[in-house]
Length: 458
Image 1 (cartoon, helix red, strand yellow):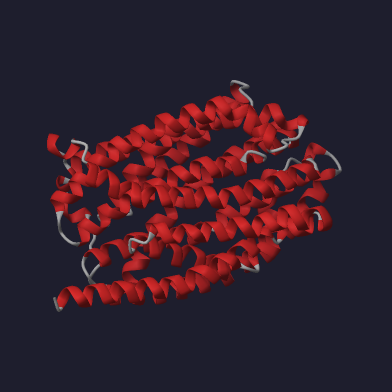
Image 2 (spheres, one colour; image 1 turned 90 degrees about the vertical axis):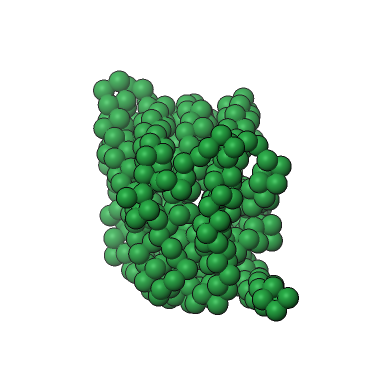
């Protein structure tokens, strides 16, 4: 039964395989966004605009830290996928065992550092005084939950590396429903304020992580570790860090640009912070397919490179790019016709005359971002495919390009053009990154092609 849950992405139609792997992953991300949205919606509806702005003002620092965690976890899973693709199950288990040690070390260090520096970070970001307390109460709890974030992302990444993208979806559905109930209970019943939303998220993710652990132990014979698999090994640790840390840093470097933008928005006032918060939540929901495509291509690229099937990598890129372009059009149409209505989920009508202004600003933000979804699709598809091929160290520079673009907008254009410049920050970052990533992919492809040809002919 355990063997039936794995999925080999190295044989068969790339389009069919990518779709089959991506759809459960997408549904899982949608449910993850769902319970993140529930946090924000309940905060906005029951605690008001200031609380909403407080939670929203932590978005960039949240992305900086948790983005690093997610990037590291995705990177750790790539060698596992490559060894699964090459059918070297012994090495695959050694990678999994060493991943556990690294995850524990990273979790302890990051949790300690972020909790100690939480107040300082919010001060450095020029968080408005009227929302500072709410921002601190929320993000401190999220930082306390970093070990839980590691637990879920490491285990779900390993499960996906062997081709099972459905099981993490089921566990996320359970945790999402749990999160809804905990949000209402902690905020409405216990009056815990924004910290209640943070605890609801952490507890729900803990449940999904534990479910992944139990499932992996009981259902995957090929992932049952022996004592020797858990022995720390310099080679495996070095390889994991060589892939995982660059991917984590890529997220963090990208987040630095987002922090610059968030700081610029904070300087515009709480109305603009609330508008960007609500607009960003809607955008995160609509961008889930792009994230699912990226994660799919990391596993697809890892398995096919492990199997030595370089030509299938290029075919997979073509298939996923077509999917990305089609969805970009659909996503933009959703924004045009339903963006304002969705944004209403995060705004309380009882907050007075500022409601219409916030909705108008949020819609402007969404429309401008949505018009550039095609470049965003390529950022996710191409970058993760390059990383799955084993070129994480080079792909990190895509994050540098995004950071530079957002930095230019935040430091040079926002002071002159205000909120209009904020709306173009993400599109500028995506275009800058694509100018680097697309040529890089073809360079990586040619290099891998040459290496495999050389190996075949001695």
